[in-house]
Length: 259
Length: 320
Image (tube, rainbow over all chains, first blue to last red; front, side):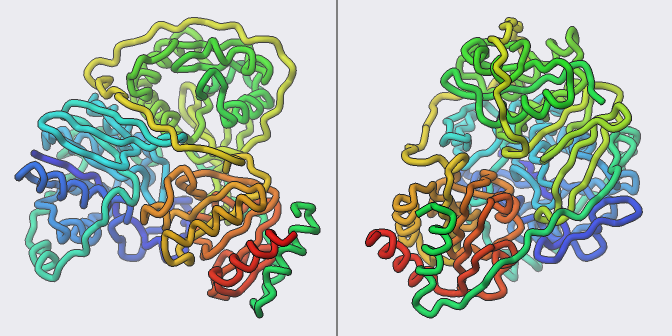
């Protein structure tokens, strides 16, 4: 079974984010890391290939600046190889432009299964996986909280507003996975060393045959007109519990006529 | 300044439109002279309520008979838009809303802007507002495309309001076969048991997070919620850990809640969580770390151990 996992390299979410005032793009100056949301897709792919008794897990990613550090993390977890689409023209791409690029890269890889996180931790549009499926004209099942592959049938528990649905589809299919679907493994020292030698194929838009007009800011056909500071919520009273904090809460609720 | 027609992608179940659908109708009414709804499912059953909220027409495919919605909805929606050409289509930020908008965006080659909480027309262009960095800044984005503006909105961004309009005219829409891309089918549905006040519209929400330490500790959150006639909620950390179902998750991924009182127990207040609850009227937080970001938004902050404060609060409520 051949599984391709879409992974995104993002600024560390633990650090405060910032927009570049000249472009209004998210600043990506520091080292990028593997988006935690995608580590679930990588882990799921490794487990499914194992359960299928063999196969290959490949990664696909896109970055404006040739960044690979996040990809190395996913390779260290156990993926075989990676394709990185990198091109200056990609800066400012929206979800649709991103999906056209990743879709073009994936179509060269002929996977049985494409996995992606439901949404990235920095852009969180939650639309890229489904758009990739659209570009590939492939069926898709989003919001998977459990995946099982039975021969050529993929069975998914898909999260819904009310609970979950059982959804089935024949391969090839794209599935987006929720955080928590599996426990991502920590790369071993051996894995980290091996990852340094694993192949990362770097392609630009021309090599991929994607028209630069559909990506970047012009391809996005939208413009940030302004960025404003949100109204700050004022912090109220903070007290140390000395065994009577519950009374304070009851009093507060009483003033609001909740109790 | 307003436009001619905004189409709302309507969702719901058992013949009732979702709260989010009604919120989008209210937003669209303020921007367009005519508001219509597209339902990939049984829209006829919703016609009266949609009409009461200002929709003039509901375009409906009828039941999808077990097909997974997104691809089929997008194919039918594209065919519908070839004859009706709305100025904008509003989607709710839901699993099916995202799937449909994403597939439609590819099919008609138009951008979709997600995660919005506001919309206006400026110089004839739709401008949408998206909170970023945990809601500390708002980014306003103008559509520059030549075609309908596809915009997706977060729940609770607008106030639903009935206008007292009559039943919306029901217009049947032909299903369109999307080919092999439409081959995913729903073989079973599981609805989690829901009793008591619902997270979306409860007056009081009591939420628990990682500070609870272990899954069993969530029982006291449920108990306290019961005593306060509240809904119980959770942070993403303990949903990911499998302690409580996703339907209880409050945050960026999960539900947006705006109750009168939000009581956060053992929740540090990660950006992911704050986005889902900082619109609450009053916030009470209990956390052992005085530096926890949740105290930055709390009206009453208790620096203490949830395992002491919550049981004491439960006893105090019981003895009233």
